[in-house]
Image (cartoon, rainbow, N blue to C red):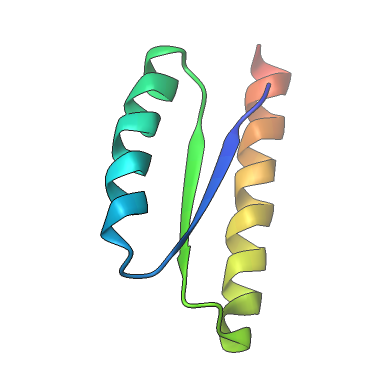
Length: 66
């Protein structure tokens, strides 16, 4: 099973709008998508890592169930 991690700058409306339409297309194909927003602050590293790890676990579970 594959998935998409979409990383964008916090408060960047251009990429935020693109991610919405991109997620709709992926949803049509049953491909999960994780959207991460960040201001590139090093303080966010731990939270981002946790979210990516959780997303990978979800992908693994989906793969086992397919």
